[in-house]
Length: 159
Image (cartoon, rainbow, N blue to C red; front, side, top):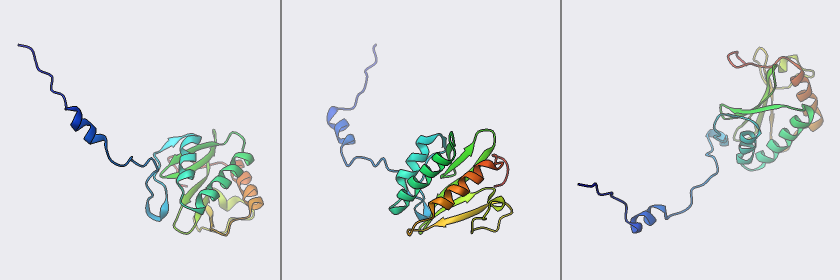
């Protein structure tokens, strides 16, 4: 005897697909940090920046543009829900992270930079918290160039 194929009636199939479209916007974690899957390349970094809430997205675009201009061929990735920037063969030199009231820019070898970025007491890392009132783009460009010239953080080592 042949087997009878059971299918879902068209009326029930249609009912399953009705309803509001699902959002393609990433979820926001605590503090408004976008939840972006770990991946290499510019595409996940741009997805993170686009998902940053409010004025922070503009800050993210400005920072990304400064980094791309200051470090031709910069390597980009999203790791641990944060964009990372690095130099091939040298490691990661900078990351961004979104918080409720600011965007944190962490320089993994910031203690070696001049002037030293104002935030942090870690052995090597230093950071700057960028608030809605903006940041000094010339100083940020100087820090990005210095950070990219230093040995970066490699996975498996502590930033």
